[in-house]
Length: 85
Image 1 (cartoon, helix red, strand yellow):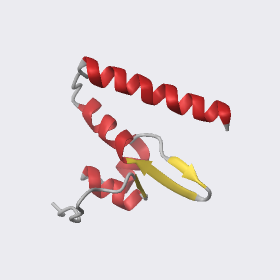
Image 2 (tube, rainbow, N blue to C red):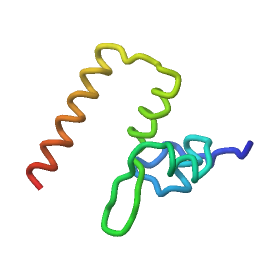
Image 3 (cartoon, helix red, strand yellow):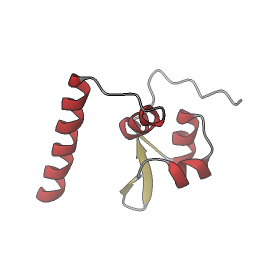
Image 4 (tube, helix red, strand yellow):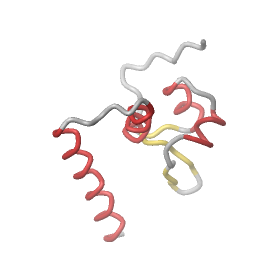
């Protein structure tokens, strides 16, 4: 198994190779089965929070109440941002 690069903290937005390394999976698996990437201009980027939620959902880990509320606020903020764009 390839070791992850050592960072004090992983960047919030990552290109595909780094996102795949963060999850410890291949780029093709990320592309085919992973969370939806974001597009910034011509760049395709993966949000670390989306990667974490996707990985947590793989084994059906339930969210506690605080996490559910945070997830709801995050979704609401993203929807508002799109509507105001």
